[in-house]
Length: 117
Length: 113
Image 1 (cartoon, rainbow over the protein chains, first blue to last red):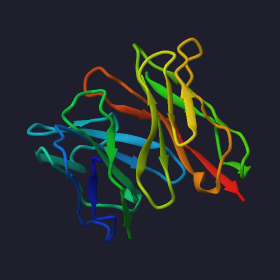
Image 2: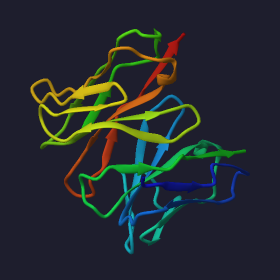
Image 3: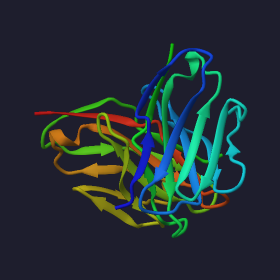
């Protein structure tokens, strides 16, 4: 079946540094990828919608200059957390839908646990 | 706006017990509805879905029926197993625009042998 690979699975960084998270669709093409953030014992909150070849659409309250999203190809989207702070520590999950249309399921990556010290 | 409300957890049951996890939604239009499962240490996996009213999604012994009149999509299983221990998320798909998934808060289920 369709696989979404997310890398790294976990990362620890120092406050003030930037971290890049990759999301790849391995056996299908995805014009749209979604980035979610999951706080402990809470639901997934959509951060932004990433469209191949265009600017990402951010949800209300998400700082676009802090969470940079690039969707350069039909199989890769990246999320860069710039100047990370401890409050950015969270579980980040990407998902992708293949080109078949809205009724095709979303495929999720296994997530990236970010810890900022 | 569009939202999903799930039964608060955690839920703890004995093996072979009957399971219900309630889910209700608020949406404009006619969303598709989903249940996702997140096993310990893993990402989300689609468990089942229903795309229109009165549809029943089923998988691995789990079932949920899309009830438009009560705006609900409750998850049920007749006899749970220890391996069903996970976090379950109800979600709706907003079809307009970017077709975003909106998730409920998740329900942690623990099954004891």
